Amino acid sequence: MRNKIDAATKAKAALEAIKGELTIAEIAAKYKAHPNMVVQMSAPTQGFRMP
Image 1 (spheres, rainbow, N blue to C red):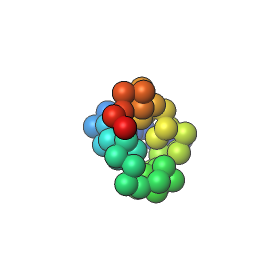
Image 2 (image 1 turned 135 degrees about the vertical axis):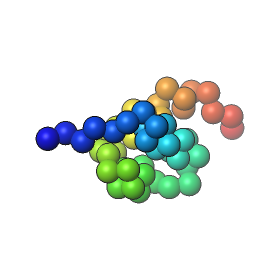
Image 3 (image 1 turned 180 degrees about the vertical axis):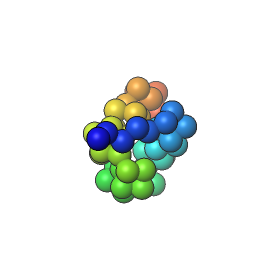
Image 4 (image 1 turned 90 degrees about the vertical axis):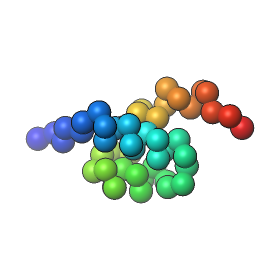
């Protein structure tokens, strides 16, 4: 059975990925999501990051 992750949890995981304080694997373990899902959740914003 698949895990269903609500929108609020996805947003929290994406923000943590954008901040870059934790690795993708650590974020995935924290939110019980696959690492690829964490990358996909944060990918739309990666083009707009300030250097």
